Image (cartoon, rainbow, N blue to C red; front, side):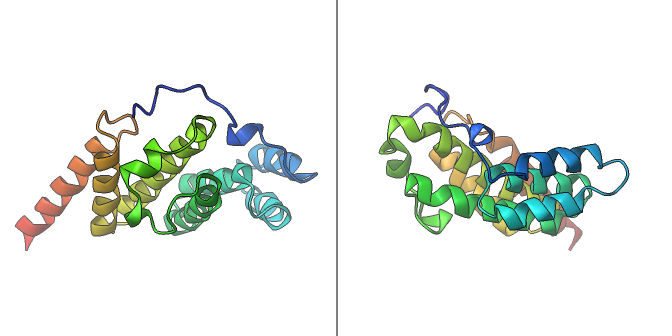
Length: 170
């Protein structure tokens, strides 16, 4: 299946949120430069812990603050929110091509979001030097995405190169 050959439907950022969440995310954005962005994001999270808008905002905030462990937690939570929407296995390691191929056409946007979120988890693990985990994730994505629409192949190559460099230093 070509992961670009579909009509985008049900984009997460178009979804309605609990009252006040959108405003809290906007306040966090406005207060980023002053260092007062985290509190509105956490308030939004407590109001809407399953909101992908909130989880993506938390991921971005923590990533740009170089708080990669916190970004990873938010990204894992986002994957857990997306997974049941598309009936994917609980453990990404059990994901097979048939899960993608059998997904209804109206859920392909969520399938892509799941795969990109998994890629983000791999990337964060790579940045945190958890290279075995990131390699496993990127290998899974490359195996599921023969046309590299998700863009995991280059990241897999980077992880392998980094691991080879570590071995040569030992």
